Image (cartoon, rainbow, N blue to C red; front, top):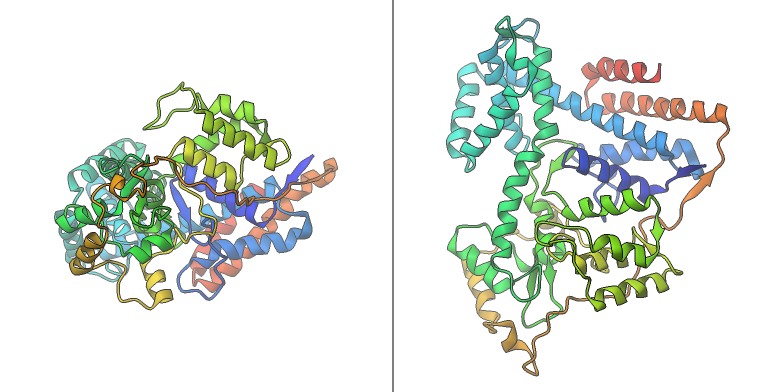
Length: 479
């Protein structure tokens, strides 16, 4: 039998694939985000457009594994082409030829410039048509201002030395070799980004109160006022991001994993994806998925496996609390005797089991992937950051110095919020018997759809120069 996934299941699967392999958050396919339509500024709508074309072709049958693979491969091709074209801009800015080899030093200088612009919100307009002197100046200015310059330089050196292109016996590298190095930056930069995300997580957890994975908003804003960390987002924006726990209205708290994985901590490095802090809960979910290889399973099996899962803050093996086990059985009872792994209730249970790694799934979908600019446009506000005066006003409003002071009966509860509202990512799976001949044709059909989509995108995005390269790769895979 072949499994066919519906619209949300396809989005979720592709999101998980790129997040796991590359650390990329594909724009337009973010969880809990509505589909971005063609005509939206930028390339955010492209992944959703590709998905729509593929789903239109397969109809009610849904997208199978071959279609998913073709969809993901098409996205990866577009991203690779984008990196190649940006490197061409860098070569032009540095007055380096793309049709002949250059010295290893010049090639490395171009790759450093590529990384520089990659980290400047993916804005390559600054190097386009720039002179060689201006191109070199961009690297120097950025290098002197970038906070993590020593660590970044060390990462880039290891990245460069680890590639075979760096050991050219001829002492020169062609453009294709530089392309490989530039493409690998996007594919491997998440390893460097993880260090910065862990540093942020460590700082947040140092302010944690007695509720695990929670930081008192008062402490959060006080730290922001000191200027050492950019903890200055407006309360309304934090609420929109789903980063607030307001179960205690007198003592609101920041939810650490929700805040870490929200859009403000993403690097907008590409027209097709952002580089965000890794969702550590997805790593834990991956272990469950590999072990059970099914959408649902028995509560006892889940409890036994989770008790042996460890994280940065949880040591395994451990004994799960009676309350955790009770809630897991309660979920199974509500879902017909088995625990649905891709459901809101189980995500909530995982948050209770790993409160510092797994985000809390709010009942109403939070816009965790809404950028400050998107929020400002929707709310009509001037900025997503609060002024010092606003921060001081918020700090003064939270009159309780300690959570215990706000407890009406003097008893402080460490219990995390719990809601019985359920929602499934994919309500049901579709299975269709596939004849051998049909099984051979299906990948070809899916790839043909993707080729047509890429040709259309080449026209729509003005990337006609890239069509031959994309089409060539796709034709080779079809053969």
